[in-house]
Length: 499
Ligand code: NAI
Ligand code: MG
Image (cartoon, rainbow, N blue to C red):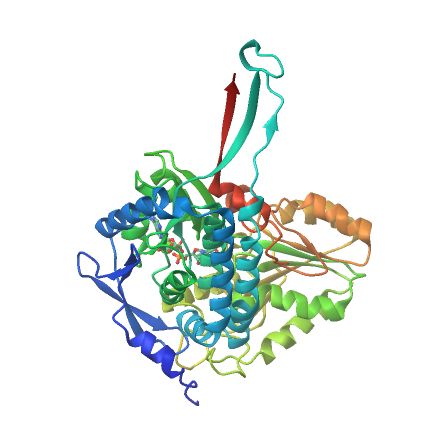
């Protein structure tokens, strides 16, 4: 096995730095002096160490964020905030090579994924939100409070930034997860304390520097790396935080909601998923097969939108399953920095054991293992893309979010449409989903029935900065992306002026 290509000098220099916390525009050591190791999932080797911030560091970061919120940041005009966000997009492009390598080394994802994120998705996303500050408007209201007549009172609404935001992000797509919280927070005039996942803290640290370079005042963006149970929990409970924006597991989402009750801070949550992919017999199979494979195997299945439950019409079932299995078997597993790799490792040894456990359960419960199912003998936390056929609704891998490359296939016949629609909604989640057919009536009928925040037709997980995205049921609270993505960062003040 050839060793992975070595990263650039700039990236190696960044990795070697004794990373600290970014608070009030300065790099500061964690008060308790603790640190943790950061690993490359593609080799299993340590590549950096980061500072383990905890409650006292969160205190300092929240104080810095509050001072910036009431101070310099509040003096920025909407147009000035716009320019800062646009500049940040430019800087991401300028430093793309380094950010791409850091994202790959931190998370394990294939180069092509990181390239798309850094060169396209992130700059586009920041530029989309750069357009918003000058367009956040209240309304004039034809109100007549306390018997006032028209001409005696003017009522209007102000849209104000919610204040200090605690952003807690996961490891599966570190930069996008940070970006979807940072951009609307900056657009609305909020300040942030960001707690990136302990498994992937690196791009957040680099982004803090780029924010500063873009002209974001000190204290607007603070980064406290550290563990969920300490730094994350302290942020979620902090009385000086006005809102938590969280992406991660449904289990931790529940803990965040509980922690937020102290000061009743606002909470938005983007949680797990178990999204259905429904394929009818008239669908264009040359699109379905690669589309369904990608829906499940993108980011090695470590994707909240992953299409992990495939329902295929019995007439095309065997062809679709064989097509996906052929793709799965041929995918080149490898280190993300190797341009030939199409499929990276899982995030950690622990995550791989979780995935293995679900595969064992699928076997035990009578699923037919079509391909994959085990870890290849090589360094790094790899697991083969796996397809199970003849699954049923009550099986463990069908009911639970695996967050790994495991596709569960079921078939249906002409008379089963009600059952498929019911089963599509028969998990605690409701995040994404897709329907594949040439019949527009059938497609839209299914779109209405699927209780998810996002449903795509003849594609899966359609993501765009302007398209609202978020979960129904236990997949979350609120929406990110698009105009709706600003809402969690704003509060409305009703003003009436009598004269
Ligand atoms: P997690 O939900 O524990 O981690 C996400 C973030 O929450 C991290 O920054 C972590 O430090 C923080 N966190 C953890 N405990 C916290 C607490 N008590 N208070 C505040 N913050 C806390 O996810 P984990 O354990 O890494 O992954 C476990 C499973 O969660 C995965 O297998 C997957 O099923 C699901 N998951 C879903 C994600 C999604 O995007 N929907 C992302 C990551 C994980
Ligand atoms: Mg956890």
